Length: 355
Image 1: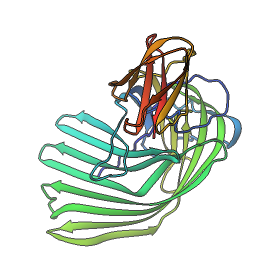
Image 2: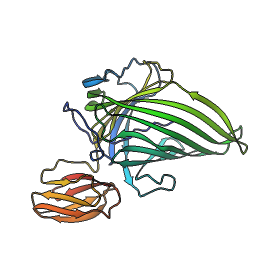
Image 3: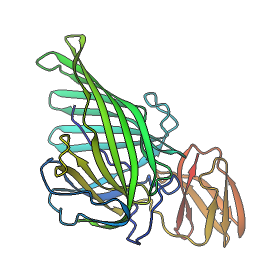
Image 4: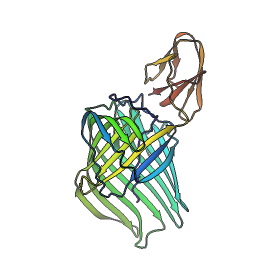
């Protein structure tokens, strides 16, 4: 099964202000976005280095401008109450890839956003190309914590999980293999070890740096002519080290991944920058909201009499309210858990979390 690397989190572009960053549930961005991605996955020796840890650092990757440059689009996440495969998911994202004649891949990935963190639960894949259909499901048990909330300089977290991958292919291979099952026992050591200025070929940003160290025990089974059998096990492998730079709304601005041999000069890297579309947060001074997140009552202080719309992540209006000057209280308990936007008559907007 082809390995695919996802970038979790979507960016509403924030220009450089040279300040420390705190990533939390309330400012995480889930909406529609276009962005540029420059990547080099050749695993060759590039001389690129993650730089130093610590405060007020500068990480300059501007010289590394070669690679595959793509303009990408994501529809963002949609709120869900549950899914039969991932019953604890509260958000779902879908990506469709058509990058070769006759080839189509549809990926659904499932996450749970909660007050403790951004948790990746797993994915489903449906791939088709002439003569072959491949369906796969990946479970993270209980989850992979992509970001704890809040994430700030000095945050550490250890996440133990099992990744189960199941794949079914038709027709079977010439050797009679139609299904595979891979199990990874993983420990992910998370360390937010720096903040400062990130300079990429696509722009400069305020960023937090996170170092992740992952150890594995990998076992593979194959179903051949109707019989399951273990085909390989690797035991403990060398820790895999990766560095990630995040914007304040959780967008993964850049990643550097140490190769499997541990060579510090061989990296896979991806630089991400973004120009916003669709539901974009804009500054607003006429209203303020609290508490955020909220479970039942959302209080809104307004400086004027105005009408507001409450929109979900699809841009659909789920409620309409008229505000008076001063404090207003709105019952949002009947809304499903997720992210919502308040849009005023002037077009300004604020985001809140219903949990």
